[in-house]
Length: 315
Ligand code: PMP
Image (cartoon, rainbow, N blue to C red; front, side, top):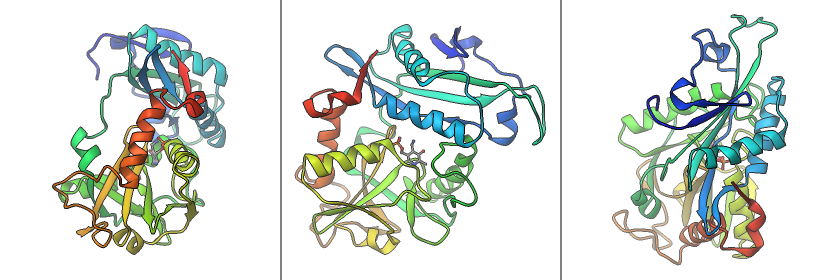
């Protein structure tokens, strides 16, 4: 990602992509104290549109506040910079990574007077995994690594250092030949995937873990609203056990990068056998709740659903 054309916003200025560098003593590199967002923009009829940028920016500001990192920019300034990063880079659809990190004024846990830096990079990411993963879904392994606990870290904050835990879990699963991992909370209840929330469908009702160990995903919220208000499906936020995923009628993951990905198998158990799910070699049926939500989400992000146009912000 070093060597490419483009512009990165850092601390109020536009830097040429190749010149956006930091010193090796940057504090966040050493201890992971920082936070970030992942935002997508989609090509609409009137140009690129940021999806739920106000909610993402609010979560970034709240992550920094929870971590006690002073932020020298307002939400409005950060939203403007995200909009401009699309036009400045000539992007029609994009993934944006606003990131807050601490400066190199001191090392050690007691370092004082560290400056806060904010950067926003935007580029054309494309699908998170592959178009095949979106239609045919994923095989996942339940992780032996527990997800965070509310008394160990700040689970609402999208903290840089949290992702060590996600990567330990994901890498173990990928090395074992799986596409994803499902992480349990320290008490053994389902939390989330490595960088996505999880839902299951059973007898026509959607269930998703309550927000304790898992991130309060913005896609999770979008899917809850679309399921309840457009499809008329009841959604319950509660504690879920892994065997409920094994025996679900359908399951899927949600995230800004991942969008909505079917979860087809967990720990070697194919999901939805009793409900007549097709074999893994075939895509999810078009009338499945997963496929219907994927379709609605795709419409929402492109501005094709009038009721959800307020989720979009033009560049
Ligand atoms: N959980 C984790 C750990 C994540 O990193 C993400 C991606 N931001 C999500 C869930 C999904 O959140 P969102 O829908 O807001 O992208």
